[in-house]
Length: 151
Picture 1: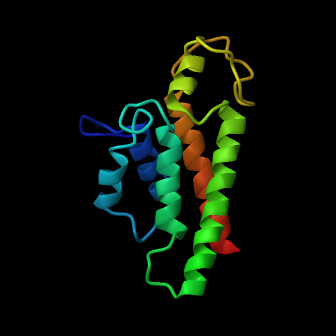
Picture 2: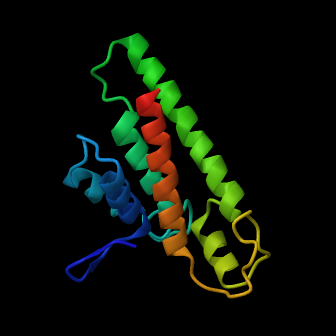
């Protein structure tokens, strides 16, 4: 998780900050962090979609998404391609960690529900894994964006 001068950023903010540090995008600015501030705790603390996922998707949109200035054909192409990449990312997250829901991930971390996900092979030590979700998401989304940029 990202920290700065006594400020502790949520999962969505942390992925957005770290992914931008790993692979900077011109469109990154404080507005992105303002938006991401509402996605910690599984969307404003509701336990829904994990902030690491939503932060990664925000970064993806900023890096490769549409801004409405494209002609209709380019708008459609970019929108379709970015969604395909986003879906691939979400599917990989679920495969790796067992769910996309924050509340389910935390319940698995506490041993309250059965463990799922390929990266939970040795979860004999129960612990909060938010840092793992953030690190994994940052690495994966940065790689996907870089791959798309170079193709």
